[in-house]
Image (cartoon, rainbow, N blue to C red; front, side, top):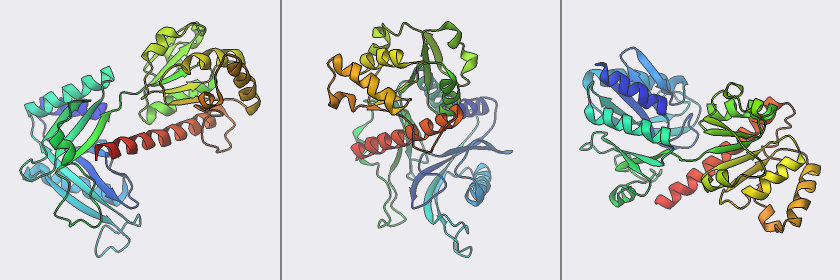
Length: 341
């Protein structure tokens, strides 16, 4: 989304009109759920996707029409196999898509894009709200964490199948910047595969190593930054770690894993993953118990981390780690959405 807002800003400032296509609700099996966005210009799709296939083709065509009509509006798409009544897709779901026309030079949207880019760069949690009413005409707002107006929260709800088609939520609300980071302890082969894999699915990774040769940013395409640290003294790092962050431990041995784990267990982080064998887990956990940690505290550590896909190579292990973290992020987002209701 940062890149999308950057492109949108450049387009508006260079005299181009745009349409922002946003999936604001979905039911059943859909290619992409709420939160999928696509930026359209006269030449077609510029950035993003709403799922590909027939639905994306149709959305692009509708967006091109919106560039001429200048009419922002909400549309419903049925993704079922009957081509006479819908798009002829076999997914079996329904999606609600908002088409927001944005004229060149739109100062409000330029300012919002600049603000969004700044939020991404500073890891500042924020929410994107879109007014879906005819009167609101797709007006977009950006709120920092804790500043979300009550009227926006109460007027935001997911559309249920039992609701009539003409009564969508007044606002679409999306947590735009999670404000969370992935701290990866160790810069070896698995980390070098994991960082670009995680970066491609929008995780911000920080690699921490005590070997200078393994802190070179070029080893980790997509990394937010690398840090040379003393694994025995992570006090400064631990002060920055929040409950929104993720920790992946993949150092070069039992002793370094132990040094990291005994310190990060004192942080409020809610996800701690460690690669390695069950034997390695037994050895490290025994030492942590000697340090006074209880079994309940040790249960915070997921080891071996990653979904069980029988991964063997560093690249395969990276995929399994990314899959587990995507699942964890989705769980967190569901919890956050439920809390908003």
